[in-house]
Length: 237
Ligand code: MG
Ligand code: MG
Image (cartoon, rainbow, N blue to C red; front, top):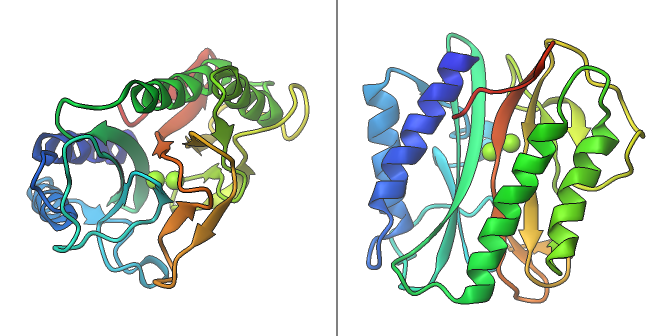
């Protein structure tokens, strides 16, 4: 799983370098597909429940599961969430980043990116044997809500291993001490999705793209994290 995680990281690093004003989300997809091939890994998303691409690319008020397209051109000041999964020898890695397009990101949107990333780190910092799923959710929620943003409820993180989505579900909200206890050897995909406005989302007619109901900006960061005796081991960094 460390190998799969490393592939995902390398693909996301390549795609990040492709993000610029004027690039399309299909350009990101093509860069990811070429890099996956170069690394000898299989895409986890393409064909999953019929999803057509190796990346999910979600711009601005799109939350997750956006479909790369030659018609979606990135503009200065946009943000784009890029989610990637890879399979190496039957094991999965899953990670996401949200990236500013160009240099002119507005202050609130920058704060949204920073808070979402910080909430993921806070969640990772809670991971150890005996900690609970509620500890993870609470850690995310505290960081996000202190900034006046909101945590998406309709999508959650997940266990991961020889399938992309395994039990348990990992909400980005909760109460400390509640929920299943973590044990050494578990591997979790922790993935806060955070809206600048209200938490509600809806899915577009394409059947995939989730957007914020109030049109506010949304960010998403994800790591695949193993529970070890001494704490978290992040497999996708
Ligand atoms: Mg993902
Ligand atoms: Mg995931």
